[in-house]
Length: 239
Image (cartoon, rainbow, N blue to C red; front, side, top):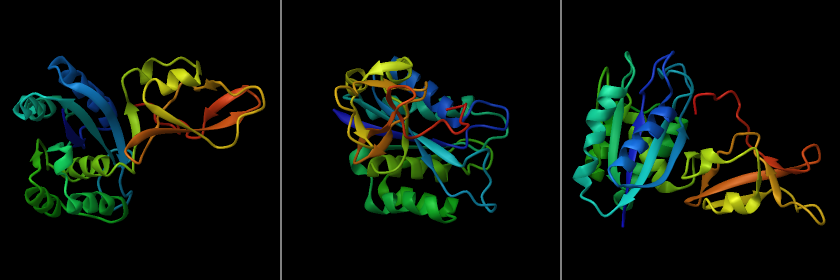
């Protein structure tokens, strides 16, 4: 079963749903076409006055699995072009996960610490064999689209916006319920004696992408008598 990556960026404007929501909607379209959900991740890039962005300068990557013809994913280009908000500059990168090159991964990390250009993104994509397209406006989103796919393939940067069952979790759940989603729970300290089986999610579970897997760091809360997330929402209502 092959894994394909769909990186997207610059799909929103100041008043529209964010790229994370668009990515989740696109995942729904993939599922309707019989692809398997392997997670949607958010990737943060350099925040710098020289870089135009809507809110946080972050992109998203969908990972889908299946045995179908990769041409069946071509719909995503037209879908995103028609779904992206007015005034946005969307880009999309489609790539088989195992074909992502070291140069492409290096580009993804560079986008986190320095200003990179569309021309550089195009050159890296061409050498890697990635299908990278500008889908409206200036097409500036190709930078984040390529970098998002690269960082997802690297497996050590980003946060999961969605996994099957992740957003259906309640506010107080047993650790086993988290683990059944394929999430590794990382404890900040040893559990209390005779307890420590429950989590207070605070209605926000966004595992980190680390070593290619979903990792959820938690700490013990005396107030809640349960584990709580180390990472918080931090004013990200559109994720």
